[in-house]
Image (tube, rainbow, N blue to C red; front, side, top):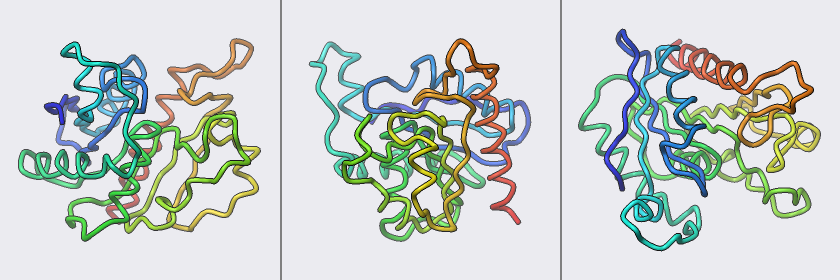
Amino acid sequence: MSDLLWNRPDDEPAATLLMAHGAGAPMDSAFMEKLANALAVEGIAVARFEFAYMAGRRTGGPKKPPPRADRLIGEFQTALQTLLRDSSGPLLLGGKSMGGRVAAMLGGGGSLPQRVRGICCFGYPFHPTGKPDAEWRLSPLEESKRPVLVLQGDRDPFGSKTELDEVALPESVTLTYLEDGNHDFGPRGKSPATLDGNIQKAAKEVASFTGSLAD
């Protein structure tokens, strides 16, 4: 596991989000940078980390594919233990795509610290890209012991709005769509939506979700 990379708001944060990257891009990718900055503007501190396979690429290691998602739970747990030691206040677990899936898996595991209030998934990989007939990855969402917020581009190839309209999700899962967004929330050029606007909306939804958990 890498060291934590922090984005902090100017004032006391409403919560701290421990955020993992997706399968193919590092914790400081352009998407992760934009999202972490937008979350800090909304009063959410963000602590990013990298799984070992991704961190190894920075030191000249081979470009290995990620392990199976369930084999990354332990690394996420280690990052959580570090964050529990180095921070105070409410915590959220989350991540981009695969990272969000692993966060949800951790949320359904053994007893979570009381400080962990919820799970945030940014572009959840409901099924392999472009393969809606494949087995759906719903069990992490269904088994999570904390409320889950999913921010999803409405034309995400890992689970579009058209596909998800036919899927029953637990009441504990809040699904919010980002206009004309793909897996990285980017709209097409003809769309009135913008990437920055969709990322800002996602950050505002996280802030609202955090507020609802405090009630």
